[in-house]
Image 1: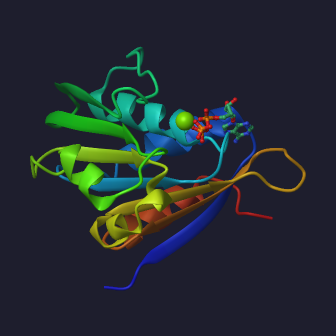
Image 2 (image 1 turned 120 degrees about the horizontal axis):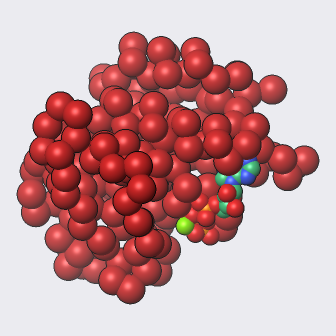
Length: 165
Ligand SMILES: Nc1ncnc2c1ncn2[C@@H]1O[C@H](COP(=O)(O)OP(=O)(O)OP(=O)(O)O)[C@@H](O)[C@H]1O
Ligand SMILES: [Mg+2]
């Protein structure tokens, strides 16, 4: 199936968070969400907003997963019980390391991966890919979202945000 792609402009941190929350509504059990973008692009901010919304826990503390590289979350969302893994693979070097992380052991678990571009082999497993960029002006973020399976829903989400300039 061909990918649907939208690009929005998030003028502020709040908009990045709002996008994370909106994308949470597109997530099904077992989905793999890839977050791409350089240092300070906003991956963690978006991941936190998304995970809090999935679990329906607005105040949940979500530290950056560096050591260990993966942190697990569980909770009762609005529609179902969820388990989520939040990974940061900035230091990833080899395919075997990815397997050791056990990201895909449970087919029901939603997996959110920051620095996903470090492991291109993840691309063909992704349900949702979010790529964040800091524009030359340094203000706001350009955020491109692609999905292999949620084209219509993605268009609805994008309609709530200003288009990229
Ligand atoms: N739309 C936006 N406009 C302005 N600032 C933003 C926007 N989105 C996120 N930021 C800010 O960018 C900074 C970096 O965010 P964050 O820590 O989420 O980035 P990251 O991609 O996880 O970086 P790293 O890979 O270095 O951990 C934070 O201060 C965050 O609030
Ligand atoms: Mg981060």
